[in-house]
Length: 137
Image (cartoon, rainbow, N blue to C red; front, side, top):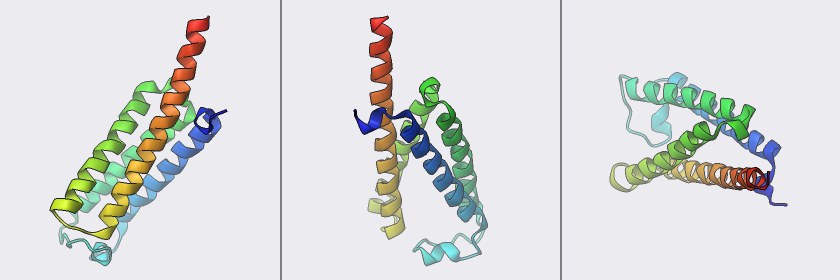
């Protein structure tokens, strides 16, 4: 049995991604002024974009949590999640290469890429198995 055919493990992965996104979102919203400079970012004195990014992460954490409840019935939501992770990977990689080579951006790109890959592998295995079962019926 493939590890990617385990629905409970898939739910746990989505829940962990939700918690990760929740904490990133809260950090982006509530870190003290200038704290992002500790991570190597240029400081935004107005905090608009870091707060906006934080709100985006909070919204995404809800999507991950909803998908984790019943992943086999959330096909479109999972496709959205996979797309969001791959877009994040592309954006962060390009940002690192062409805008600001900040270590945390490279780490974030790697993390989003790995999370997106893991969700994709579970999605493909579980939906492929479900399609096979439907064809046999």
